[in-house]
Image: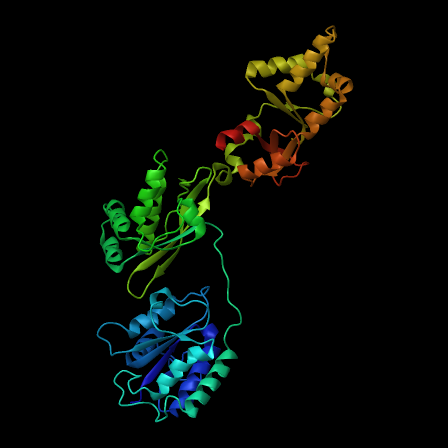
Length: 470
């Protein structure tokens, strides 16, 4: 039976696979079999057959597997599985050939000689060896052709193959960047197997030891370097050493984030969804803020090792706390209900005495529907009374009302009717803080269903509440 060439590729890259198959068929004069799952005219999985057994059979027979690798933004797990099956110990000898169609190659094959499919110079060695080497295919009886490696037939084949590939290769490169600090941890197959076999009672404590000892930092970006106060992650850096570095730099910082991260990794290693624990980690540099580590992706390599992508999300209680959990609810508010026009019924000294007796220093005014009208602080009332006393206008102070204050000091009405803001009930405390910053002199925020000023008040939040959460 003629040798089989298996083309491993994403179906989105079927045009590249077809160009490679056409080259193999043309130069072998049809003496080689080519397995290409994405083309109905090629040898591929048979109709009504189970896919994986069909692929396994073809991979077992394959003398060469050509891996078409384009961009890093795709999921390459199935292609990696195919390459792993082809090279399973005990299977017939198979040659893995990586066709690099972009700037990157799979990390597992980064040390392999690969075909740079983007240039004629990169294609030339493959074409030459494919057509003239007597042992290009494991166990082959001789070269595919009788052409000389420097002959015109080879030069012509290189030029045509380069032209065919250039027409179907992706133009440009997919670009990506991490929105938050990123670290990738890799655990070898032995540790993965041990973690899976642990009983529930010993899973977390023993798995943590296995992870800390065996996990290696396989990737990380500059933001993560800065987060841990390092210029770079040196080759072979273990997770245990990274954690030790953090502990030494942050002696007084709570280490609870480490346990939370370990539990996530253990769950993921067992193919279970991890708990999302928002446990903050203090950055090593002063002023670097706090971040919560979250396992966001899990990769299983052909070797049996596993990779865990960890993103460190900026964490503050303001960001994570819903306003509904901290606001003073309307039924618990100390407030006054007032019909617009009845400000002459609210006596200032009575209001001050009630604030004193209740231990409050601010009072909201709502109309009969619950809509916010005013909000005044005790300090404003004291300022008005003090001005009355210093100007000698003490007579009749007992009967002075809000209406009198508005008449004597028009700016007072402006202040207590405009120096507050509104947010929706679905907001978080950081949105409350942002709204406060928009309104000059604002120290209070009303919460309504959608954040509209003409809706009934659900509750309110003060600047003091915000300060205690920062």
